[in-house]
Length: 505
Ligand code: NAD
Image 1: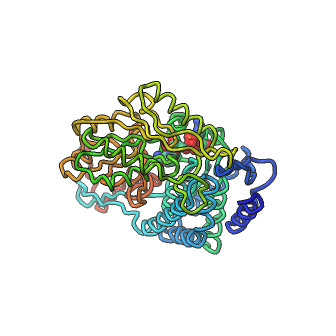
Image 2: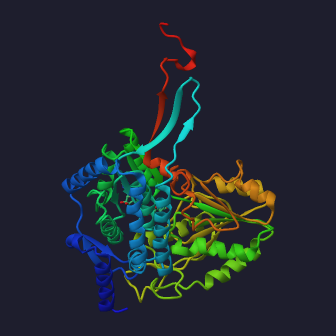
Image 3: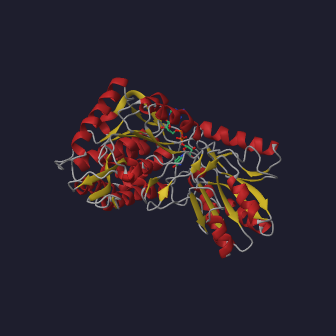
């Protein structure tokens, strides 16, 4: 693509998605990882503008919480329709802004559509409980009410899907959303804001300020963490970010929903269907250039199938087409930045120093894209689970470890600080159940015969330990966006006290 064609493409997408009014000027430069060029400038949000945005969200909450939940669902239904209509344009912009292949950019928008559908159904199912009271003529129940404006902070690698997991649920739960996207991906965020605004047009119950985007970096994220007007802050990104923001939110007794780093393992057992295992591990290790929180970073393979598995994986790796993510047939696009490339190189050097044998890695396509960071994915055989293996490096590095007994594999799976996703490849029922059971994998996501990445929206998404403990998306994750009320109604004429206590009678 020539420079002119590229500019026309971006201009076309910006016009199609209606995000023009916050672009231009001297603001934040947005680069595409595809060739490193600046594709737009976006105005950063000033402190005063941030305060005004949260004030609008607080005012919007006053109205929105009184709107019946199924009517709130109507807003999300309209958003889902608009996303369907703009899937191509938004998916392409996701690819341009993140460097992920177009197929994955489109998949990300499909995920947004799916969560909107889910949330529309949910808007009629925010069910409470009735609870048996120990007192006569008393009714106890549990009610769920809107919580308040939700602050959402997101990472670059899923620039729109993670917001939609939060926003679709928050909106049906009665909460406005103030969103700070990654400073690397403000364009797709502004596109979503524009679509959400259009969804609200003509819906008379929907106040202004339900969905707002604020643009900035760490200082802005810290402001949100400290802001008592945001009873919930949902933050997705590195463990370092969670470590910085979590205590600040806790200090004001705010609610934090943390979705942090992963260091996900796939265990390949002697009974595994190796064809399937190779395909699954390839997608999970190399997809999105190893830049998913659920990327497979560790392969824990039984000694009896190690050579076979590795030789098949090496051939599969050799066939991965690396290149411009917008071109058909490309399976792996670039890393997001020079820093990401340097982190990958440093990790490989450290793995070597810790006794590893490195196959792959290194920069490619540097002549064609001197300002972009394309790499070969790396397979690294390690003698043990050393410090570098226990670290999340956001790049396509797959460390290979060997085991003899399943207990050993489970122990290795669990012996990292993060606890997001895990998988076992086996046709042995006992092994599968042991891995998914209470003494098995300690992760939030535990899969059998499918890879660590590529979750569906119907389940709750998130992980344990340094992954932060938050759950988003499906199942009952919506409860994080509401406040729980236990209500006791006495419809009798007497005043029996709980626990049979007599007080002055
Ligand atoms: P990042 O931590 O650099 O940035 C994420 C967000 O937090 C951005 O909006 C950024 O501005 C903000 N931020 C970063 N450091 C901060 C700090 N010290 N104080 C305040 N705010 C800060 O992450 P990234 O490079 O954009 O994304 C990759 C990371 O995100 C990986 O660790 C990946 O595993 C994780 N991630 C997790 C999930 C999940 O659901 N668990 C999903 C996607 C990405």
